Length: 391
Image (tube, rainbow, N blue to C red):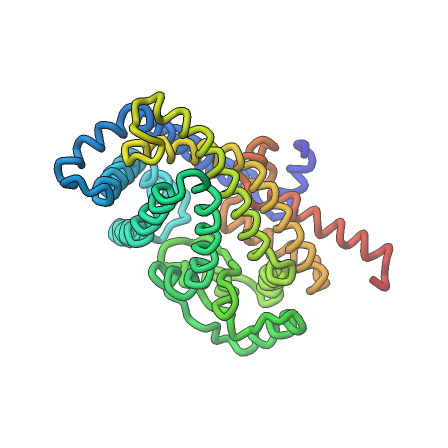
């Protein structure tokens, strides 16, 4: 979009020039930090892949006493700890300092530390079994490990989808049932006939660490539920919350969670196959005894990361398509384009969203359409309905 359309979008949000400039500055700084974080991460993994893996292995071998499981977990632990230490300054600066500078964070330094410790504990509890499981597959089925590993990852994804809203989210945020009866009645009307029960709508305590508003559909089967941030419930009008809720219902109606799992599984299969092709030639050339040696773990992680980065724009494009489908569903379900525009305008203002980011930035990093595009969809929907009054 050009400058004229950006101006129209800014005026439609009711933003002053300074507010719009502040949002753009915030997003540009976050983008620079994201790129810097990716660069630092890749630099670390490259060094470790081409030289550090041997060094880590030599450190661990005397302690592992010939036990390859201990050797593997030792190398994996040191590699992960190094990656965290290298990335921690940028993570703190981006997630704490910048968020406070732009008055978006309510998190205390102690709160940030506690959350990090919880994340480390969760990463250890989940990461160690995953690494052990992957290498068990590598060691027992070396010829077609990539196929077995992809099937295993599909099973893990399904299990994680089941437990995420029940066990993982409550570790970080207070989750309570939505108690506003009048609002629940509105949401029941939106969910009627879709199969999604309103009793599965939860209030998510985001306000302890941010002023940003958000909502999400999470879980699978019996654990499926819509979670509305308390920053959303407390600051938005009922008809605006209806629109946001209808958007999340749209994800359910269009089966986006299931489709996402299937898509992720296909990408994972391709990624593991690429790793198989690269590692079987690269690992011996770099002096590793085999592509499944613990010392080659950093090389495996580097190849997976490069593949993931290459696939990022495609996956982001699919995600934006899902979000557009859910936006359109929200308009169809509520038939209230003004509330839709008000809701997304308020979200953009609270979250300091950039109205019209560069197209390349959207392709590379955006999982949701830019706010200007989402607002334009309401106008498109209105024109469509004016031409088809019976639709």
